[in-house]
Image (cartoon, rainbow, N blue to C red; front, side, top):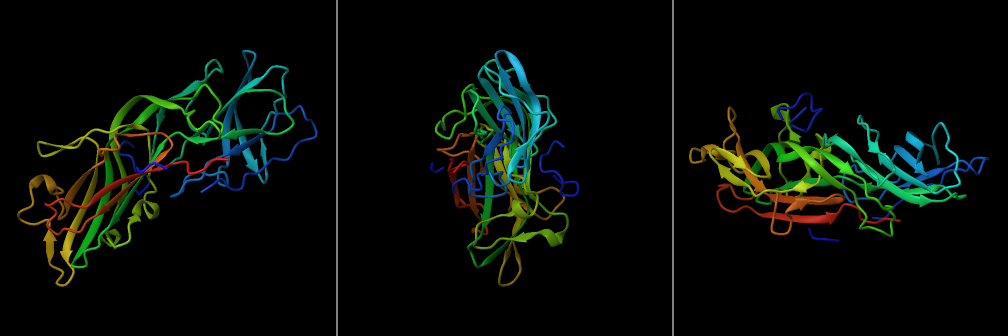
Length: 344
């Protein structure tokens, strides 16, 4: 393991708009010539990421001898089986399989000649995009096991405060200046559990925006930080998936910031008296949230060890706000866990 906006009804979070478990084996039909499939998804350590137990369906393409055998067929879990229609039969030549999950409103460009790609994928921050490749598969009695990998990166922002003399009230948390659109290219080799280096890639990144991970509707929704690091998106917007991409250093630019960074809107109060400590009359204008009484704290998304988000990796930020003045250096630590903890 490596160390590593105002919103509409809380429906959107993008500014633009352990080991595997329950590895089920489908039941075989009466005709052994029918191609049957099974799916395996690596478990992850946090959040509502898709696992072998929770994946419900996937889209599969299959090619043999230069011909299309399965053209974007939806395969659905029914109990302990994976079913699809119309059923495909084993040809005499080997078959290449390309699959992704969940079903997306995009036409994939998959030809079977050297792989394929999903052009213009629009990330909403909520869906865990999976992909799988199996090449050169000859007729077999067992189901074709598709080992899925995570195409996106996962970002978790944990907030806490251990200073008992202050209360930190947070109203918004967001990841700023990230690409939300790109094209995904499948690897040309099989994504077997024994071949962890076989991964897809992203290109044609465009549309920088913000991904809001926590937002309030009313004053009653404001959270008060505790000593326990907490990922507040899990009970709020449920936004944590980003397209893999390079990170740029954060810089003060005019009356704002440039680069890739985390933005936290909050207020800090004296826990004994309730008096407001920050923001105050000495707070610079660029740290004030317009038309509100809150201040804005900025944290870089990059570090000496993390200069880009990579597919299939989870990035966990631990942000602890303990300084009532906010002007001195605040504790900041970045760890990177393998998004795929174990595969089988």
